Image (cartoon, rainbow, N blue to C red; front, side, top):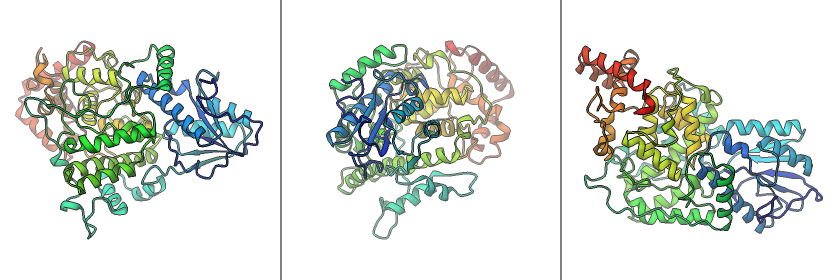
Length: 527
């Protein structure tokens, strides 16, 4: 493989360069608006492998490998279409930071202007802008047409609202795009939201046979990337033993086919269910392909709706998946850009505790955390309830720093890009922005985990015990959290029921719970 470009045509500066088109690692879309009017006699594509981006957070080896492999495959695809591609690989460029590498390319190709689709991260947008300003080159940022709601449209929808709610946004998007509507323009089935029907746990005997997702054996490009990552980032967390992710559009489409044909049928019913050694459940596992833009949300939404109309999936399953993509995914992107940069520093409860070391090893006696962390380190994946109600829930109850937790989430999941990760973690899981777009903290005792999984049946801790050696840390810390915030939560109709349950606990036990919570947090590394 060339030091400059993996099977990509060199874009040497001897040719006139009108526009230098910067394609970032999460913008691997041949239909990208910045590519549509390119003239390869005058324009060139710039792609940069930045070691700085891999180490900005202590990224999982599989996350680094996914980005690099997908980027190299995309560069090769562009080259086959006749594009002039300047590919700065990690092996071939001394620059480790994205901004420095961009300045090097501008110096070499001396373009009249730089063009880029809206980046997915506030910091990266700033780095690109600063580099072009320093080199005195005009920068043109283009709206990202991958999304169904552009940033200006979302800003207008949000207006001056102090609190934003996804449900209202979602209904507007359904109407605008004509998704799951009947001939009268009303929601199919008479309801906008079937979330209440999508909360089943697995049967007592377990999930049974689950049709696996479509995964892919590494090809030559991916194998070379895996070797590079293992050598250069050997101290980073996670494993590369199960790297089977889609890295091309063709593979991503096959993964979509597999989900529609074999897995959508039970997705809705069991989307919140958890079980030991069942990392993927019935989930789509399409988030990495969507976030790299190997596939488009419109085609996923269209396929899911068509499957329901053909009778191959329930309305509850179809609506649940569509709500995740057309509703939540679009909503959190809008909120991210509306509220940055303050979202990144928000800390409503003022929590400062650092992550326990076992977040990076999975070595904890809590079976739920050990299972979720174990599969995260093995695959770089956990589904949304595992992230929200296990790792996120514990992080909030234990008073961990929102910034430390957000950095961890960004580091360990292969689908993590900041516009998606930060609102989900800081805003939803940790309530760090004080309820800007969530009506209550998403917290629970061990009882919820017991109801939705088999984790508790193998655990030395008991979910119904609040105090003592066998008390579930989730349960102890849940009640401690409620006591610490009782006066505030009693003012909120959504949390009043939780604090009302405190009345069932006598003062002596409340004191014991608080004392036990202090001991747990003091010895957090050993629980």
